[in-house]
Amino acid sequence: MLGDDGVERARAVEFSYSWGPEERKEDISYMVPLTWSPCNFGGSRPWFVCPGLVKGVYCGRRVAKLYLKHHYFLCRHCHDLTYASRQETGRIAALHKCRRIRRRLGGSANLTEPFPEKPKGMYHKTYWRLLLEYEKAAEEYTKALIADLERLTKQVCGDPGPTT
Image 1: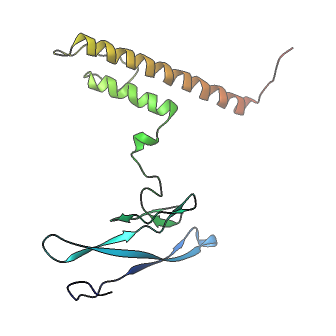
Image 2 (image 1 turned 45 degrees about the vertical axis):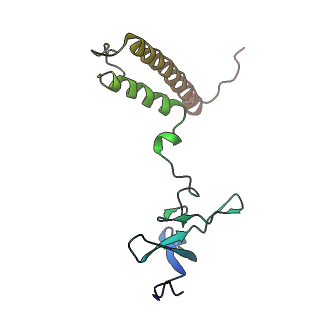
Image 3 (image 1 turned 90 degrees about the horizontal axis):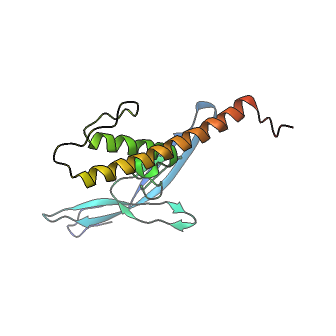
């Protein structure tokens, strides 16, 4: 493909690689289209066009980076790559919230240490709101931890069923 400045530009990049353990190695090869956009001070830059299919729908996003996950290089949207904190649920999210509140109040993230005092200059209303949020998150964390321990106990000891 010839650009406006007469320079030859690639239309696609071929990805060709092997994936998997030695005994079950899989050869993968596919083309990823490129598009070009002009730069402000002359020239142009390439963009990948994501070749991903998510729930049967072609992605086609113009992106600067592709990420390798589950055998293929695709955009972060197709691989559902978001911040780690957005992926957290249940027990871990509650634990991180507790630690975040403790650090915000100038204390240690260690839940076994006493809860931090109100920092100088912080409104009492803000401190009490954070304390309530902390207690709610700590309760959620404790409930999730108990549920996990009960599940593990059943797996290890077996489910005794109802006793008569």
